[in-house]
Amino acid sequence: MSDKLNILSSHQRLSQSLLWDLQRQFFESAGVNAWRNEIVPQYITSNPHIAHAYARTIFGWLRDVADSLDLSQPVYIVELGAGSGRLAYHLLKSFWGFFEDSTLSHIPVQYVLTDFSQSTVDFWGTQSQLKPFVEDGKLDFARFDAESSTSLHLIQQDIELSADTLKNPVIFVANYFFDGLRKDVFRLNFGDMQESLVTLFAPDSSDANDPAILDQLEIRYHYRATQPDYYTNADYNQLLDFYVDTLDMTHLVFPVGSLDCIGRLLEMTNQRFFMLTGDKGYHHVYDLASRGEPTIKMHGSFSMMVNYHAIAEYVRLCNGQFLGTDHHHASLDICGFIFGDSSDYPETRQAFKREIVGASPDDMYTLKGAVDDQLTDLDIHQFLAFLRLNHWDSSTFLDYLPVLLDIAEDVSEQIRQEIFHATQSVWEMYYDIGEVDDLAGSLGQLLYGLDYPDDAIEYLQHSIQHKGKQAQTLYLIAQCYYEVDDLVQAQNYILQTLDLAPDMQTAKQLDTRIQQEIRTS
Image 1 (tube, one colour):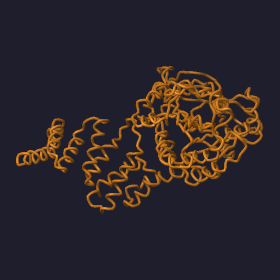
Image 2 (cartoon, rainbow, N blue to C red):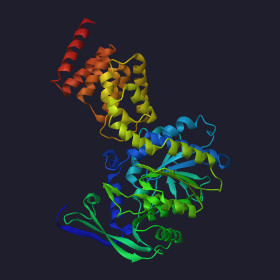
Image 3 (tube, rainbow, N blue to C red):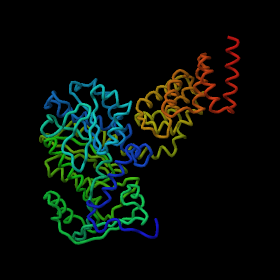
């Protein structure tokens, strides 16, 4: 950063800081590129394993409420801040993979993707992988602003979901959502409470209206004595009273924006909803003790740790139920909130215990980090086992691809078929938002090596369609057609290869063989 700094805003309550306006501008301008270009993290909350866990937990909740539903209207699964739509795609694939064969298949269920950025909402409508779900009436889109929305307008059906129209409780999915909502910070010191005011500095040449400035900001905290009757909301002040009486020598992040949002969701759903939410945060009160000034993590946008303990206590104050893990998480805290009647929701609790606690997505992410460091040392049986446990995660597959290409010609027939079926499952779970990785081309290359030329052609053609013509891809297609004795197509693609890479020796050699065989045929 430049030595000379300009003050953008001075001594503001954190929740009222310019930071949040810049955050909104970033997502409005970046749209899906925030995830396509890997600016904003997404894997930990959008992978096939967590989607499967959520799908099964949602099914448990449906078992609890099935007899009380009004079947004239769908049960809506509404994803808040859905971003690229990757979690939704994995969750849809997982949920509908078993739901239609279940005893609850008579219940109409519809998924709704939401985001506050209109460009992001528009992007979902262009996604070919989402289109079949839209056509089957299983998916719709809506714009939702966590800071103001009290209803949802479904774009495909042109209907409004609100307290006046909703007949069933709603399921909300909110991953990497609460970390980006407005927060305040307090310093607690043996019964005294100070509010934290922030001053934002940036290089004097920076444009204060440009969200790119976020990565250049310097943030300084200042403290001023205040009292626990800080908010106009009595419940919020009751929570602050609890923290003042309970915590000493710590900095407290108070999720005021998250609590405001939950309050609006309660109004919209007539106090009836189930939410699953995963984020970096804490839900045990002891995790809030002895904390220093909170870190504001910059990644194009920014995020902060989520005080799920405060959210859980607010849920209870609103007569809701909270689900959390007893053990300490490593990276991702997944919680559940239930609002509705006073039943104990045994099936929901059992599913949460099995899928979120037992088969923990956080544990899988932790394990994956360790395995990834030694992934290429796994033998093929170990790799396939890990891939299945990850529910055919494409990133795991691509990391192991060099090993697969190396052993493709030497594996047994049984393993050859297992790898073939694995490629189909990986592709089925893959959601393409235009990232750099060329999964289709990689699958085509592997299937050619495994002697599945017809299937390889299909993937390689898909690679050309989405990544453009590459000499190596065209050459592989030519090889595949040559293997299946389609010399006309083989010559077509080898000529296209040589147009792009006239000095490619392997292509010249294949061209010579093709011409010789055409002349003698």
